[in-house]
Figure 1: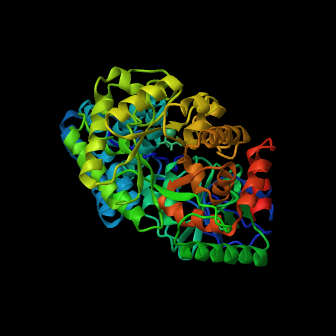
Figure 2 (figure 1 turned 120 degrees about the vertical axis):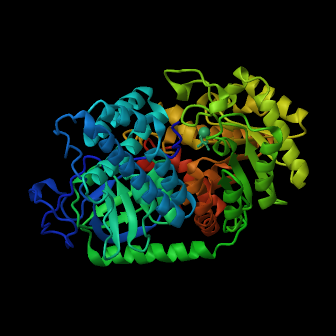
Length: 596
Ligand code: PEP
Ligand code: MG
């Protein structure tokens, strides 16, 4: 069974190269070859990407180590019958060693890093690909060739399936490289351990590599691929280091070049002026220190209140979020609790899980989202149909139609958790597209005594927000999907990351429209997509009139601190200005000029 659920990326195909860049200070790490100077950006070149974790760092570039060639042993002739069993044992031992090492690292890591390492370890021991490799070995194929063949087979299958499965292709390659390295007696591929603070630049990063990073030595991340919700971004957030993804031209920046990574603006400056680079780092550090002082509640400098809430996925995450000044939970992604469940959890079991989150935020607002299953988050018990375009298919609230009772049982569990904990939650449905769907959900939620709302993540719902609000008590804007569906761009596609940027003016126009509908109806409208985790954008959203901002716990203080520095009028001016722009970059630039 394929259980890996993390977004996973790798470093396949990357050959580290370095050159004596005469124009930049060069501290060469892992230099393996020289390439002509002309192929590198000149000093002062500013590369643009998608900012995912704020902060500024200036340091030399390191690149992931060269991968062992996967074709070592690939030309070996077929094995005689009497050698096949031993070869199979050698293969099983290599796979077990790789899994064991990953498990060991998982045990010493915490949070998302630990989960990622454990998931990769599970994949290394997955019966599916192990069986396919064993079959080949038993037929006489040497182990390295068998591993390559088996993994290629699954890569092809997953690529055809698309969506989340296609993303797992990179996990498979990562496992293949580790097992092949082990079979060939080579060190495992991965990120070099730098001997000074460095900035890790890569085409993309394997989760098993990023999960083990030491933030004291790897002080920022920049990748050519990856989106705001990519695995690199998730780990960078956990490590608290600046991160920019989808950086065009990054592949041409060699190891050793000094770069300035600005995770707030989304830029990588190659060979900047050293004095101004160090000043930019110091200024960002001061801003981070200010953020660390922020203790809530969410309010602008002139006293306009906007609740700053946390996004969580289980009790542990809620307890961690409680350590921040978050005033409650704006999004509890319940489907993430059940990604590995083969059968629907009983009402009582669900109630216990939901209670943990309600208990962690006793006396505070908690918004529980009903299962957002399907597309990139399939649930085994939801009986998803085979679909050509699962992101446009039966996902979110739409699964209720084919699963009689599933939604009602979840609402029953949520209501029971509210009673058990004495903290009655709000409840909302994902992927609402019509007012009729909103009414049907609200009716059912009220039957269970719950306060109903819906997510606005489909442009149709934003356009008809006023009519949806006739049925529900609140709205919560999911900017991740709203951007995906507005821009017709897969949110997981690295190539399309600039389109799925929540600063896209078209997305912001729909957000503004939704918020206006909420204001006219006198009902709260929050934002719980990644947009709310961007301090600058959070101010713009406040200018639109949102009543709450719900972000990853790691982003809560930065958002709250930024809000505290600006007035409501500044937020409104920035909101008005972004709606007049024609590009995400311009929207960001005008907001920055108004909000500082
Ligand atoms: C969103 O789409 O913005 C959202 C918050 O939901 P998810 O990221 O879980 O799809
Ligand atoms: Mg969504």
